[in-house]
Image 1 (cartoon, rainbow, N blue to C red):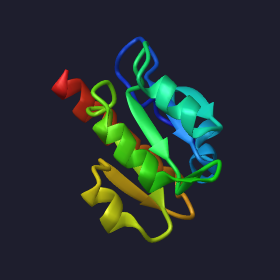
Image 2: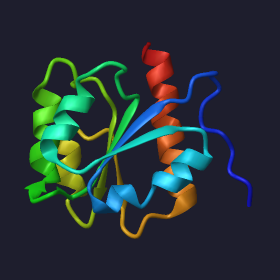
Image 3: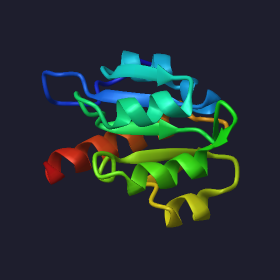
Image 4: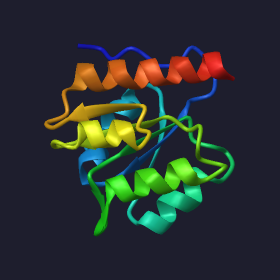
Length: 131
């Protein structure tokens, strides 16, 4: 099945992927027209999330290196430069807590391609409306 492009704009939206589960989405998001950057450490995630060009979305796994994703979610929401960036949390059971901490939405494992693309598209469109 062909993959539809997720953004109507000429520029590919930047999506940061952090954590092993989130990285499983990289190829699918590239095929859908996103510019994908995978990060391997919490420090790299926090640095890239707050830099220019700003990511349009962060796909955050339950752990990044050895740091809990929920801890990183809190830090991203506390940062002035990252507070408004939509975050999809890839969870194995912490969806309620992730939403309470400020996740924009959650995805459960295993990742399902059509659900992933629909949730990413929704967040990108909401971001366009906010801008």
